[in-house]
Length: 294
Image 1 (cartoon, helix red, strand yellow):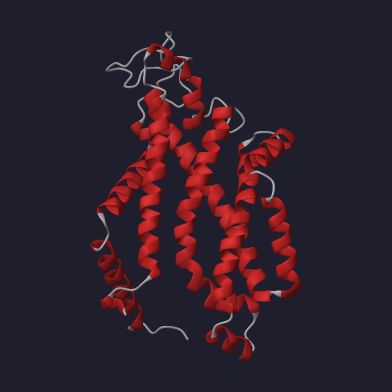
Image 2 (image 1 turned 180 degrees about the horizontal axis):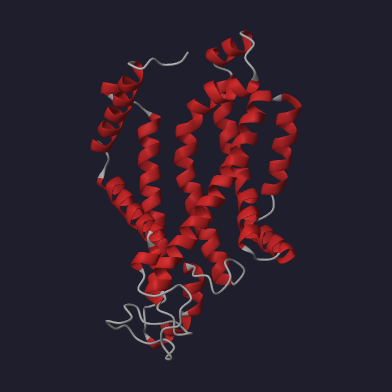
């Protein structure tokens, strides 16, 4: 039933009040995580405005030039400004990891909910197929597929998304199985509601908090996988800036006591920790209601 014009503002106000209450209860770790994620997102969105030089621009004839007022983190092996590459790397690393994770959830989440809703043969076929894919180690499977299809951005996104969707399938199926047996879902079946309506109105809203919190966790795994593949030389390809490949390209500086290669590595670690803080807080908030929300 559609909401009236007077009901909509009340519902919006109630939602905003609930958000404010939850934010007030957020622990310091959650606030730290949200602050770090905000800074990273700002760097990704406004990279051309923040970076003093272009992503591919060679600004020095001297490779591995030391830190200075002109080059905040020095230059890389080709004379490109490392600070600019680090900022543009945020856009590439975070953007591609987000799209990959979103695609994995669309594929795995949809199939998991369908398997739980239909059960029977459909559930068995999808579950056994997922089990067979998960039996192959992820890194080996990914490297094999990248060797066959090539290391383009599109192939990297599709391969990692399909492989990671198996984990999402298992989670969404397990969560949906706990919902499909409840009375309100059985009542919807008895009323003659179609499967798409039951999934959209009854199943998905009840498992959405679990999926959202898992999204943060899966994003971290995908983000780290892309960085690892780029470090190995089979992920994002030059001249695209990516934090994993930046660690590899500047690793020679470690032997001379230069910590420059550790900066992109620290950027990877900091974002991973921050996202995990936020995801843990959201999961704890979604798992139970406070006294004033009961």
